[in-house]
Every structure is written in C-alpha cells, then in structure tokens.
Image (cartoon, rainbow, N blue to C red):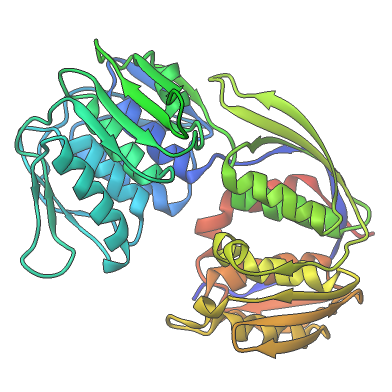
Length: 433
C-alpha cells in the first residue's frame, strides 16, 4: 500500500525544470537501439516501472544496457532466443515492442499477458499475417502467443486511424525484412517512431497518399540501424501535474522544458487553457529532432470545466488530479463518463469524492462522475488513497496546495511510479515561511 505521506502546503512553483522522459517513447527508443549496430544513448530514458520489463527482456536477449546519470546506453546487435515467456501485463505498447523485436526472428518467442490487451493482440496478429509472419495462437483465450519462427515478407498493410502499437510492431519487425515494408494509415499521426528512425539513419519515408486521405509509412532498403543519440520529450502525465499545480498555486512562476508535442500532450494544454491556466508556449526541438515545447506558467484564477466522453477516456487515470484542480476552479466543474474508475480492486471515483469532502470541498456524487463546486481553498486532512496510486498522487499534490498539513495513508507505489516527478517538484517548490 506504500508508506503514509505527510505533506505540507507550499507557496508556489518557481524556477525551471524539464519534464522527465516519456515511458512510451522510452520503450520505443530501447527497441530501436536494440536493433542497431554500435552504441545508442537514450537521454532522459524514463525510470518508471513500465519500462523495466523491456530492459530485462533485452538483457536476457544479449543486449548490453548501462544506465548512467540522466541517460541509458544500449549496445545493439543480434537478439538471442529467450528461455522463458515474456510477461507484458496490460501494456499494449510493451506487447508491440516485443512482437516487433522478435516477430521476424528464426526462433519463436512466447508472450503472456492480460486479456485486456485483446484488441491490440488482434490488430498486431492481423498485420503480421498480412506480411507472412509466423504467429502461434492458443486454442482458447488471448494468451499465450508465439511470435517468430520464419522470415516475414515485404508488403503493404492498411489500418484505419493511426495505431502506435501496430505501427511499432510492424515497422520494428520490418527492419528484418528484405524489401520494402509499407503501413498505410488514415492520418499522419504522431512522429514518434519516425523521429527515432531518423536519428538512427533508417531509410524511412512518411508521405501523404496522393488524392486521398491517408499517409504511407515506408521502410526502404538497405535497412541498417545505426547507433544514435535519442533525446526524448517528456511524459504527458507529468507535464499535466507540473503545469496544473503551477496554475493552481497563485505565486507560481515556472518554466517547463521538454513538454511533448504528441496528441495527448496537445490535448492537455488545451484542457489547461479551458481551466484558464495562463500558459506561454514556445516551440522547441530536442537534439534528436523531436518537436517539443517550452511552457511558462504562472499562478492563475481557475474557472470551471466540463469533462466527458472522449476526453474522459483520454485522461481517465489523471481524473483524480483534475478533480483536485476543479476544487480550485470558480464555478461548477463536472466530470462524467468515468464509471471505469469504479471498476477494479477499489472504487477510485468513490475515494476521490470521499477525500475531497474530507478536505472541505463541496462535491456531488454521480453514478459515472462527480460535480465539484469550486473556488474555496482545500483544508489539510487525514486521507486514505486505498492503495490506488492515481488517488495517492492526486492527493499528495493536493496536500501541497491545501492549508495546513495533509496525511495520505495507503498511497500505493507512488514513489516508484512518480519518483522523477517528485524530484522535479522538490527542485522548484517554494516553501512557506
């Protein structure tokens, strides 16, 4: 459940900090580096737990990985067969990286996971079969799956909307294919794997389909992956917490670097502006040509928002923190379509409502959400996060805003998950005198 956290209020966030690297991009960068020749350096590679399983898989496959201060160095080369199945849990992107790394190998790699990945599994299997890849499926259920055992073929596979998991699986596996491998998608999508390929000098093109909606992602010959520097943009979730907290704390004057330009981060910036958080955004670029943003944010007078539908789905795990922001927004903030937060081991939505009320917020409960009458300061209190890290981090941050002292019992493994983020807060937090 994690040790209880005792949090005291601060005046604001002042100074400069960089958003820690994105876990998703870290998984992709590790995969590209493992396929390369020579040494690659991944700067600001995420230390979040979801990256660790791939690091262990690569080490078992014979890839040398050394973590130094602020970066990870990877010596790529041919991958060895694994002795045990790979466990991917519920991570569709980890599944796609493993499939892409081993899908074109002469040996088979077994993968175990959670049935929640079934949609991603189906899309990857369809793509691999279209390119002649060997896939072994269970008689019943989703797992275990076997990838690899024969060479994949050159060809074209068409999908609908951009799908990062399918893109990674197909194009990483395509690095082992003789001939051109093409993925066609409805729109351009994010340039994530594309930037990694560009840095590694992979012969790759992304072009608009002539006369129709859609883009072609083409791997060309000769497919050689060079050792490279991969300078990664930041994690969208951490960007939300840093920028949102600076907006709530009236004495903040914070400049945040390496804010990403991915779809989710763009939606985060839009949402913060709807909250009336005052943002100044400057276009930037990482050393390996990832588009980034430097964002300056000051304490703001927040106003109410409504969150529902696709926005709720996109920010589901961050809704507890958005509810905390709603407590400081003048007017009535409404969050709907969040019934998924009631599922699982704990009622996450119920915990958010209970803890906000303990902090003297006016909160109304809905079957699929909550209504917060904001504008009054939260009060320090003794809270319980029920072991859910989404609730634990939201109310640990709420304690920094609230008047007095806050204790969060059972916060979950938030130090392991959000350790890099807490380091950022420690560097820019201004304590009350």
